[in-house]
Length: 504
Image (tube, rainbow, N blue to C red):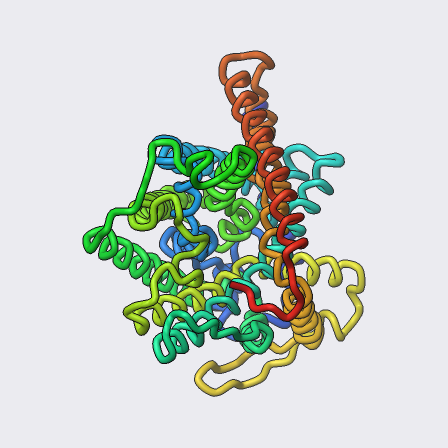
């Protein structure tokens, strides 16, 4: 009986402590209440707050699925035909399916780490670094931050380049239609990078991930649109003939490529497929938008299964049908690389959809960077009005918007920086392959597996411990060989690079 009483006392004390934390969090968020009077309901503001004192989250598995699809299905789906062409009919689809399973498996492990130590009732972890800090700690936290934010910065620069290429492709497509396919129709990417940056400066004022659902849904629809157009054009090409030359092992040594090129391109293709599925850099931030009940880890696992399944279907269809259409000569991107010229209006529509999708995807990948920098600055200078104070501004068709001076200056500066770097290094997408190789293993595989082992206190050399370690080491080898292939491709492109030449 005494033991029961002591347990009840401990539970009450924990409840009182949670209430004190919530009250403290609310006091820090007084500006939010000031601009949102409806947050106080019948004199009890806690009804509109979550268990951590933050405004109630409203995300569902559907909005999380949209975020995942936006993050995963990039314009790289249109280059999978090239990847399949390097691997062939046997290895290509097999590698696609293998990495879809690996990504799904490790993502479910990571979803269970959002709360710790208990995945349902434990304390929330708002970022990937918080998750690693709570489960592993030590130097691994800094390594996680370096890999995550380095990759996110690289992706936003790469998306600036890719979006401008799609915009340029629209102009070139109209030029080819008007003057013939033999005309070079060269166009500078820089003006379109500036247009993309101006759009991002406006969208970057969206306060956080929680307000991003509408943009992710639009971007997800755009990804379905251009993937479907690419798939439809490929099917039409296969039906019209003549049939392209395809093989079980992909590009043939001595005919399509040399022996060394076959090795490097095979490594690069495996890496491209592996990185095409990765979205672990934003998984925790996406999960932090979910309301409960149901438990966040259950909703995130459902969103992950839908997102990965949808992605895999499009990847297999676009990759395999694209390979059937173009054979071993498949271009790196059959829309911007002009695998198709006609109907020009449909190619234009697909490239416009790519650009719109990348506008949304840019925000999905940069919001974690914005949140990290702003939270660190708020902790470092808690008394600074420039950093912490917000002012309500009424916007047409929007209503009250909380304006923050630091957010405006810092986010604008970041977008400008990515645009300038994109203009200075138009071959940066090759460098992005190296960043992907460097971050794929630690973020998608190593940390989720190590945290699962630590949380479950799994015995060393048990069956599950052994096969998980084998999976981790195998993915490390894939990352290393892909990094080597990326370095080799980067060196080749730098040698070929001519300033002011349009990206093809």
